[in-house]
Picture 1: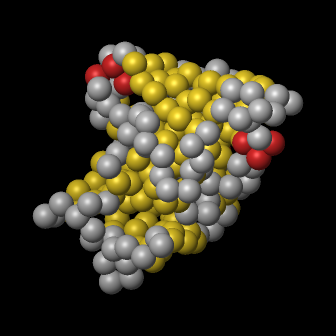
Picture 2: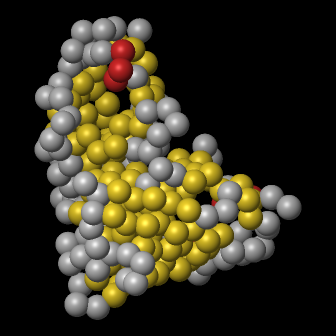
Length: 111
Length: 120
């Protein structure tokens, strides 16, 4: 069981908006540690999508956005496209474990 | 552009030591602003951070608790690479292993991944 909790799957039609939640606790997200998001296409390594809660690396479309509040964070994707179909992971630091932790991943299906 | 190239065997026998190497181009393993990480991914354990090595006036290493007694991550400054050694492996250590660069708390460059199977 992962330290950070994500829904196993979400889905949406092309053009729609979806959001993926990431719930932690007082020893990670709630302690103020940053949350980062990664996209993993089938057969490839994860790629950073959002860093520092809400920042996009160059080259990542502004359809992707991140936010954080309390012990949770969220990744929103607007204007869904078929190419967004992938697994998404949240990532933070946990002070009680003294290490980096990940969510269990969310599979996005574009209908 | 930073690139990480992984190498190492894809099959390891139970009780033996898993060894992988990650060659760095476009950055230095001795960088004062980066950390060099190993992670793994399996259906049963998900994405798991294993540990990292980094240089801040001296070499340091940090490991996740679950493998702390079995893991070593070492830098090799002469070849600009770093390595992972995981001892006493069992079938539960079967996974895709990744190396990755860490900066500002996140992982911005990843290796291509290596499937390591633990089997007789």
